[in-house]
Amino acid sequence: MPAYLDNAATTPMRPEAVEAMLPFLSDRFGNPSGAHAVSREARKALDDARDTVAHHLGARPAEIVFTGSGTEADNLAVLGGAAARPGPTVCSAIEHHAVLHACDALGDNRVVAVDAAGVIDLDRLAALLDPTVSVVSVMLANNEVGTIEPLAEVAALVRELAPQAVLHTDAVQAFSWLDVAALAAPADLVAVSAHKFGGPKGVGALVVRQGVTVRPIIHGGGQERDRRSGTHNVAGIVAMAAAMHATVESRDATVDRVRALRDRLADGLVAGVPGCTETGNRATKIAGNCHLSFDGVESEELLVLLDAAGVYASAGSACASGAVDPSHVLAAMGMTRAQAVGSLRLSLGAGTTDADVDLALDVVPAAVARLRTG
Ligand code: PLP
Image 1 (cartoon, protein in one colour):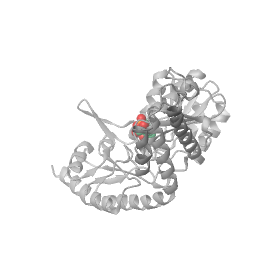
Image 2 (cartoon, rainbow, N blue to C red):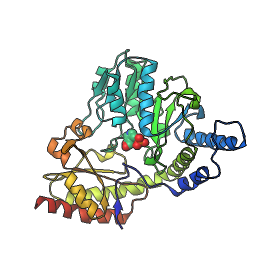
Image 3 (cartoon, rainbow, N blue to C red):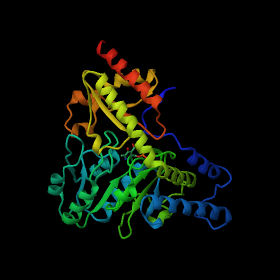
Image 4 (cartoon, rainbow, N blue to C red):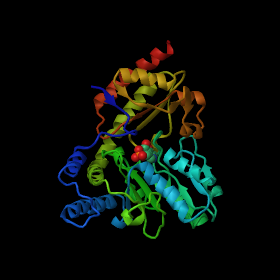
């Protein structure tokens, strides 16, 4: 059996989510914005899903805006937040491109440095905040190295030094592992994406707290209280709610089990492969993240060997037009180019087993050794 260790890229759908969505792909096909019985049935399902999603995000139903992805939720937060209150944006150096590029597109973005473990530098943040700032965006957990950011401390600084600003947090990678309802409570805007916790791709949500204005970035029929137009993806939204519910029900047990698997995997590889360094600090990381760097290895080549041996992972670099580009996250953490291009992300999920870890502990050292001997 191959080992799928790329759960930060996407997760398999939970059976509860598949089951919940199927009727809305067939008999229950109504447009929830209509006025007849078929529409009312879809509207009821949408309302129920909104209640569930709101509950698990610590929000009111009216504060939920359904979107077509985590990327769209981040864009709505940044672009819609800044449109409502012009001014510079501030974000951490390790934000996902959905935030970073949206901030860059606005033309006046201040980037906050992180330390070697990927934790935001609060002194640097304080130095970049002032009353003109419009949107501050700091993720709850990072997608590459798994670092959990100190959002409560960030929020305290924002409230004190940039009182007009809205605070956005990208909780896309956090939901499987952390109590987002509690940890994201200090934020005005919170983004999630269904396919990262057992829901379908192409559906997400943004919490927009009562009293916080975001201007729409998609214009049309005025759905979602005029904050996001477009006919609702009822099947996707219903499935996202089911996946959320199933995730939260089993989250504590999953975190404990997966953390033990991750520790065994990371300890085994660090001990078993010379020149293998673990990235970040386990104490401030989500349980599913195992990020390693191998001296003298190019991870693009490593991934090919792992793929052939049935271990599915991803790298800390992206190969664009023939040149290997080290990730902005690893660069911000102070990794050298050589370390960054030799890095590997093994991301565990709710479905990861002991057998997956055994296979990776077998395959990764052999693949690294093979690359080093040429
Ligand atoms: N934010 C983070 C931290 C992510 O990891 C991702 C997906 O990789 C996104 C945003 C984008 O989410 P989506 O794939 O739903 O567009």
